Image (tube, rainbow, N blue to C red; front, side, top):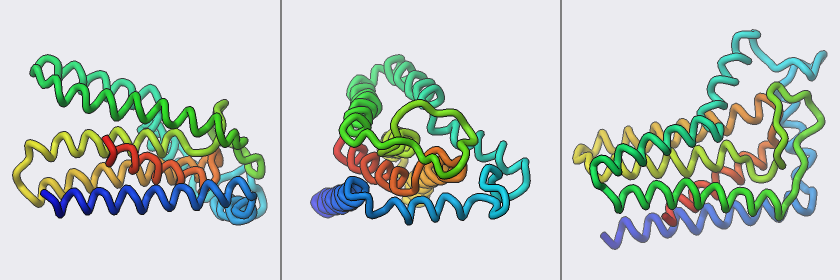
Length: 205
């Protein structure tokens, strides 16, 4: 209805504003010091190469970050698409493909435009070779998990269940983004920008 459409439009415009604000600050270099200070907050003061917390936590965070990896996201998307094709839900199939592929294309275009290097103030706890802004894991996890949540919500009539579904999608995107900061492979501004652009694309689709 009109109220839902206005809510979605407002959320998209707000996310777009946040993204442009962050992008402008990143280009000007105004967020560099803040970004680095936050990264250091997740590291041992005496040994910046070591993340805060027990050694086991590092392994847990690596598992969490995999939820936003290209491999896991591709597999999830592929399984969902095949299932939808089996069910002859062609419109939903197009929706999922548009969200995932379009989001990936948009992400790579933005990475090319901004060409920001990965953080070098702390040691990376996982290896990465792509550019830094915006965070790919944060962007794609927001796009895919939110898009799939919307797909499920279309057939779920319970309001509580719908709220739970969207909350899970948001939570997954949140912890994936947070894991990128903890592992030292992204600046916080990369992650925030990734969440913003991911939300914009998911809402647009």
